[in-house]
Length: 301
Ligand code: SF4
Image (cartoon, rainbow, N blue to C red; front, side, top):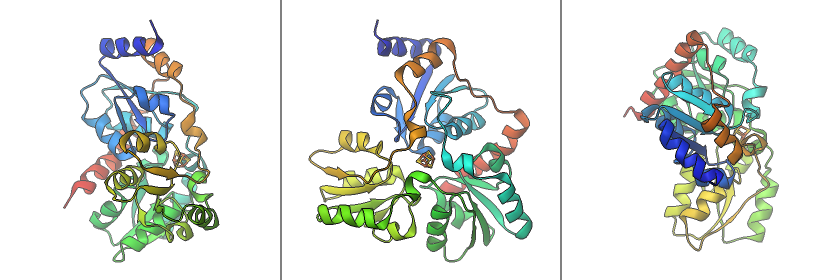
């Protein structure tokens, strides 16, 4: 039996689902039950009746799924799937910001460590960040780790004072305005769709700014048929699958941490229980409050 058929059989036996982020390799997106961005996948993980979740993304995503659903067994497809923004942002920086601004609420991007989440009033994703910052009661917000997403939110929420952490995503932060302008010169008919983890000079060139899921929906619904996509190239798989006769151009944007999962890894999780996520109960309970607030505040009208 082929490995993919074995995976299908094991999924039924274990009442399992496979979740894949849009930045995962195409073959992993192809075997997933649900493909989406962080917000969509965290809600699926919480609402699903599966007993066993194989999360093909980076580590903080699988940890968030475990924290939101401690009764489920959650596995990370590949244990070396890391996010450099999470790894580089230090707890000490947030502690200092909290000491400097004791009257501020802390909103952390879901791309943060579990410890950062335990210190936060609410988490957010790039698709929910503006709603969450607007809906949180405090007028003063410390936003960590991503300084680029934070500055985008600050501009969208003029009634709030937003204090920024210094974190960044090396994949989005590395793309320069010059690179995007050069793509635009080569493909002048293209509309420019930009993820808010990008620097301001790049966001200023955008026809549309949104999360990965929002970029996908915008490209599907748009009457235009040629786009420069300023986010990780993995989204190309879903763009090609869900559109016809549309053309997409990308800057050089590959997230190494997202590309480590293989079909064999997924099989190992399902067959042998490889790579199960464990989170200390006390830490999990504290971080759960910030993640649950994310879902409540994103949906509050
Ligand atoms: S693209 Fe950036 S923020 Fe997203 S997982 Fe990779 S390093 Fe982290």
